[in-house]
Image (cartoon, rainbow, N blue to C red; front, top):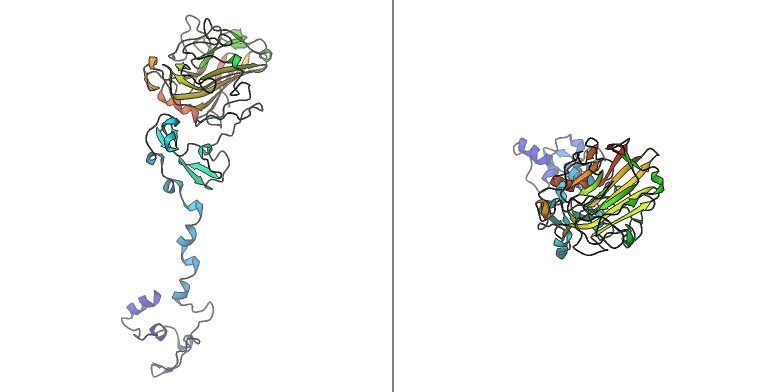
Length: 407
């Protein structure tokens, strides 16, 4: 290229001979290795015209070095390929959906917040070994990072957690290894298909809810509104209560009015749960385990009123005592978040109306804590958010009868 430009500048100074590139040289004759006789080249031997290494390299040779072609070198490195450019975004993927079953015919899964059928929501959805889920696509060998980088939960619970079963949702891992067919508790500790009931004993939800004694590790009980509670009630509609069962299906904003002495309430998902859609014990499963130093209640793939089973939620509450003064910790785990509202709460297809509420109401009209998104459609985000480092896990501390976020 340099020779062409030079010829243009000199306006025709280059020879038109076949060996023209060797006939013109702006350097001294010694550089060419040819004799000059009256302006006529008398010797043009190619073997003589080879420049010494590193002294007079023609452009045609110099252009071949890789350092002059940066694009050819840089393109091959993964860090130069932005994910946003190379990986199609979710809006390009598939039809709308409400649950995985809407996408199963196409071999896809449902990205619930976007309502789109996609290849994957998490790496677990990729069936081929070595693939990772990147922007809802299963990509081979793309992500070599840590489990946190790949959207996988890092919190596998306490040592009793076997990791079985794994819910299909986008949130946290539920605590298992507690007995029973799903690992959430023996069948004698599970509710039968119910609408607004409370646990009344093995195999029945008729009559008044039964008080479940807390373990001996809870000492003198749990301190709330100046009282100590040594038993707990498991309610179908996504909460546990103290002092009596709660059958209300549409959530009331926290704090509830102190008049009438409302029962203290710990609610991972206070909404109109309806487990009459069937499938027990594989789904629509509400169970508990009362251990010496821990109470665990699980709502596994539960539907919503009236007996709807097209969307399901999976969540859990874990209560552990702290010291002997009645203090305790509460942990909410959200594994699957697909619906917010039952039909009787103004919902349509599981959404709208009066959405679910999550948090702790200690029943005195003063001390309470509400999780972000409660009573709005954004409550679905609890599966992917946290007040700690693990998406889908929220921790609350109750100290001296007052609630605050833990870590």
